[in-house]
Picture 1 (cartoon, rainbow, N blue to C red):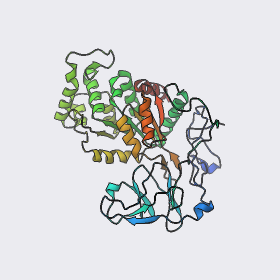
Picture 2: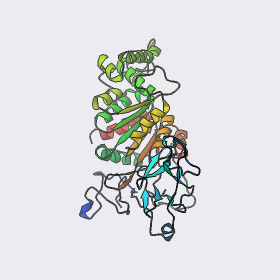
Picture 3: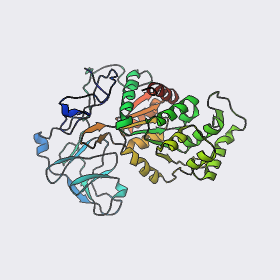
Length: 397
């Protein structure tokens, strides 16, 4: 059976496509990458007597600004349905971890508890199977197991896992989402520490494979360092040679950018014509630089308030259709926690948010899954090799 990285479906579970009106399921991708699974969303069977008998979800007012009522229901990143007073089951449009549901004007809003206003009507109840009008539908995108044996080898992803399929699927997802989605990259500074990987990331941005970039102060700092000095923390990003007094390079960059007042102005004043930040500024790609307690400088755009950073990042997480995080455990987990596992499109269809974590460390990938981002797919490799491989396959597509 031919298949695709995902096939979106409507809330009745019927596969849809760009020309679904023709009465057939058309592929969302022109190139079929030996897929052995589809991501068809199957909604719950609301004709089930158990769900028919479910009561409407209970509501309780927020007792004060930023305070949830007792027994509040904490959201997940799975599709969640709430039964409202009319008897209808409503799918939360963009559920994400660790928020609450607020029922307002007959609809559902997903709100962080710190953003609650006194009197907001919050869904309460800790069950997940419809008993209290709350249904967590974690198997909406589940695939049939190819091997149902109770015992098998290699059931977990490791550095020995074959990743050819993962790459092929990702190529097709990115080709599709370049025009029909919102691709978010979450980058650690390692991407800027290598000449070829830095060039590859610039190419991906310039060719429409990036709609938003999340990073820290270091990624931007060392990318601009590479643009001026061809170094990363004083080491040549191609020859690996340590440059004399090179440990000053990134500090000098920070000083110059701060003097210019912004990254955009510094690019102009310093005559920068290459790199990741250059490509973002040239093509109007939004970025969020979330600060940390270990930052030098920082750059003028680096956001020091963690909650402000969270809000800025969440705006892009809510739009994301594909997320790729690379070599940054902290930012990967943070962005994973605020990213829904699915997205409801404008026509009402439901598709998964494809989430990839790329790292050499199995621990980093496992930690992301253990923090709730179970949908994350790991590609365990050097991120510099990964991004170059990706660009080599996409640049002529």
